[in-house]
Length: 252
Image 1: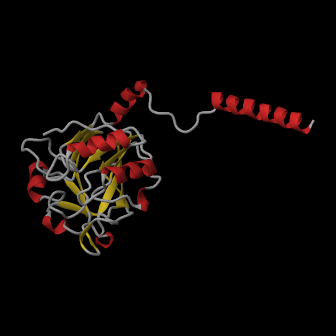
Image 2 (image 1 turned 30 degrees about the horizontal axis):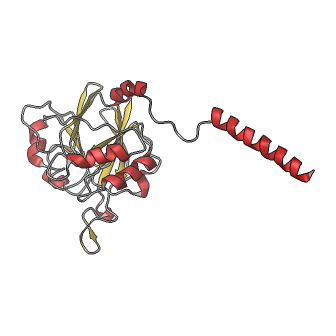
Image 3 (image 1 turned 90 degrees about the vertical axis):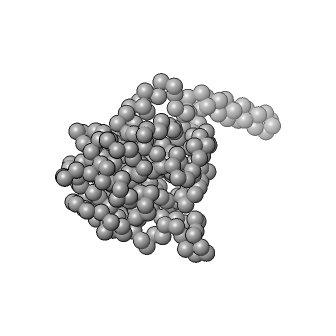
């Protein structure tokens, strides 16, 4: 009698399990092919210029982030965001190519002395609004990439930053030169621009973990297609990531 009761209970439990599987999704569903148009809309105004350099054309503004190795004759900047002092991010020659009289430059404090004009210093974790664009800085630093024992390429105490900006109805996170750090968790931008080369910054594998923690609608790899980093790292990231990824065409 007891055995029959146990069989009956087991049968009911098994039936309930299959019903749950039919009607409750197990984890997040993969992006559908029909979602591609929506993802493309997120980056419609975003131009990858190589390495960590991007241009955003939206809300009647031209915004550059870490301009580097630019050709002459490109659109002039209303706003330039610079993440840190290294020459492949803060390059006065490239800034001069796109700067006009009323260009505003937002930058981390170190390296600001190399620039001229309307300079706004931003600290990690600070919020400001420039030309109607809300900007929040996010710390950017290394945890396991060292130039010498105990000396990271991008030390936290130097105040380097990434940026969260909202423009054209899209929130974009540019991580700067960084490893996967706790401050990235739960940012949930529409688009996350993440370094993946493994040279001075996250590897593709580390960027996969960072993307999962950031939880963007779309991730875009960077820190490739320039002085360091192979495009193959971007493709590796795309294949392995658990969030949608788009490798943008390189515009020069």
